Length: 149
Image 1 (tube, rainbow, N blue to C red):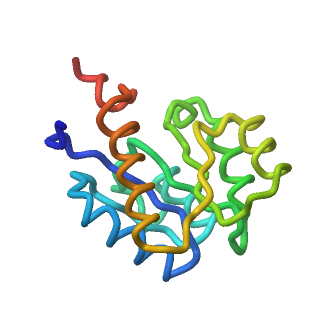
Image 2 (cartoon, rainbow, N blue to C red):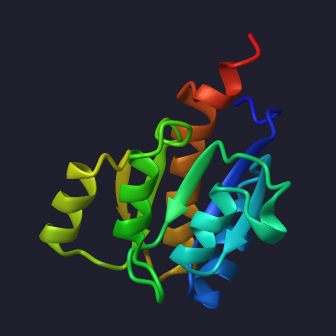
Image 3 (tube, helix red, strand yellow):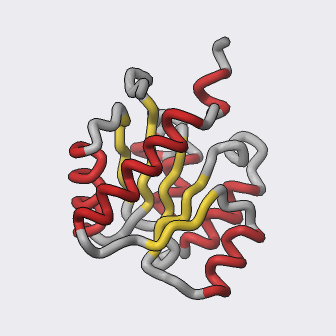
């Protein structure tokens, strides 16, 4: 598998344990990603709009988005992203503990690229991250990776 491309991943997640799990899982999977983390939906929007301390932030190749966060929900962030002409093409993976059918249907209705329920066991978490890498970072052709070609 070709893991030579460096991709920008934005993780919008408020739970520090989940952030650490994601970092460890991507590290163990030997992902060639620069992982940027913001801790709530408001900060996620500021990052994506390059406001304040995020003015030089790289545009993400892919976004992992939690649904249940303080200040602004992941659903609101998703709606913002998909209504913004410059950001709507970025694939958004909803990565949530919620197994609610309503959350899943709403996410797809609002154009989420994928919905994954977070596993709680590190082995399963690593397996999911490997699948994310395999599909989204190796198989799929993302807009950011083909712009210059």
